Image (cartoon, rainbow, N blue to C red):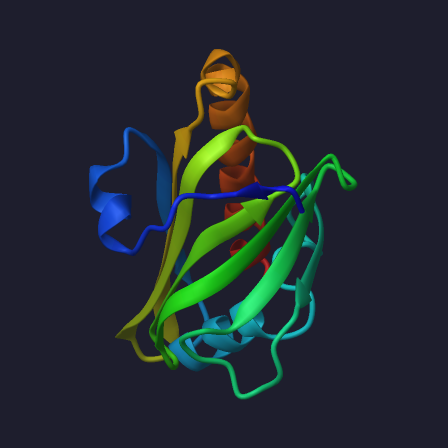
Amino acid sequence: MPFELAATDEDFIAQARGKVSMSVDVARPAEDVWQDLTTGNPMASYCRIISRIDWTSPRPFGVGTTRTVRVLGAMFVIDESYVRWDEGHRKVFVGVRMNLPLIRRFAEDYVVVPIGVDRSRFTWTAAWEPTALGRPMAPVTWALFSSLVPDIRRHFASL
C-alpha cells in the first residue's frame, strides 16, 4: 500500500474532529461480546461496507497485532495495528497504511463492559483526520463511518 498514515495513538480519538461513536446494550455477557469482536472476520459479516477483515498477526492477539480491512470491495484498503489491548475489555487500533491518500490519521476504540448478569455494553468509536485531498470528501467519509452504526446495533440486538 503506497500511503503511510501519520503515527498516532489512542489520545487522538478524544481530540479528533472527525468522529462517530455509539453504544449498544447487549443481552449477552461481556465475554461473548468480546469473543464476537475478536474471532474470524469480525464486523465484516454484519457491516455492509466492510468487505473483509484479515488478521495478519498470529494469536494470541495483543498490542502490536495487525490486520487488514477492505471496505466497499477493495476500494479502500487499510492496514491497522493495535496500540492497546486489554483482553476482554478494550482494544484500540490505529491506521498504518491506506491504498488512497485520503486519511492522514485514523483510530478505532472498542470497549466492552458488563452491566449486569448476562448483559454488557459495547461502545465503538472511530476517529479520523483527512488529508488535504480527503477534505472535500468529508461528508462521504462521515456517511461511511455512520453507516456502521445501524449495522452494529442490529447485529448486537440479535446476539
